[in-house]
Length: 250
Image (cartoon, rainbow, N blue to C red; front, side, top):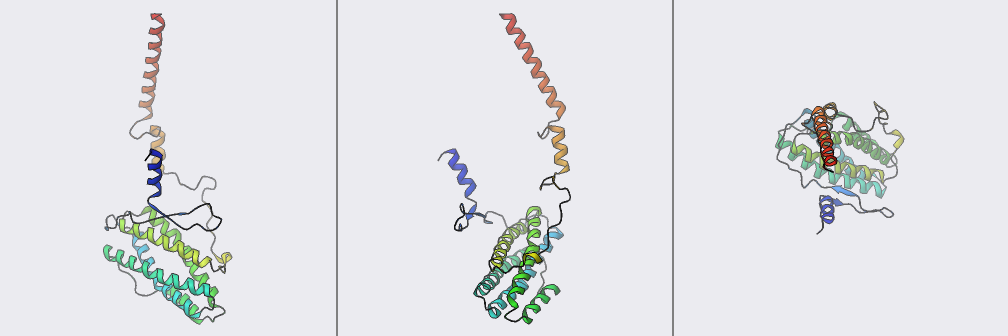
């Protein structure tokens, strides 16, 4: 196997390609969490604990909501969506409870007040109004937790929380897509993203310490700009001396 083939194999191996839709240029890579450790190692922040609790809360109301969709909806698409979301949240809830047990995090046993209100709203809905309420409430909820998962996935120091965030992200992306496949999501009712604090400066914030290090070392850790200039000056002088000796020898 050549170097190029080996590199390509390395890049593709950690991903499980999803099925390509008709007209797509190819399969979309889906990152697997199989390579992530899950030993409960690493500091746990308050945000980590809150995330584990929120995953549990999501299952506590979305499982019964999905079950209601199977009972109350007359639309086969919504029935299928509800069934898939309920079943998948059972799996995610098991992963979440396992993580909480490993990290000694107490989990709630019932939905919070907002979630209870949404469930009651669905119970009170008739066959005509249920579908829109079900789809819009779940789509809005998934949209809120989506960025929270990204923050935890990028920042947590704990390997078990990291793995849970990776897995939860896959579930949430799947559920958002399922809900949107109903073709009745009211996108206009979704909250808009806040305006950027520094428009035009790019999506990646510049770390102050990294910037200071780059300005003092030219991007080379442990080497100051002064040292680099001295080395370049010495090389220049040595080059001039060598050139003069060559000309004299002629």
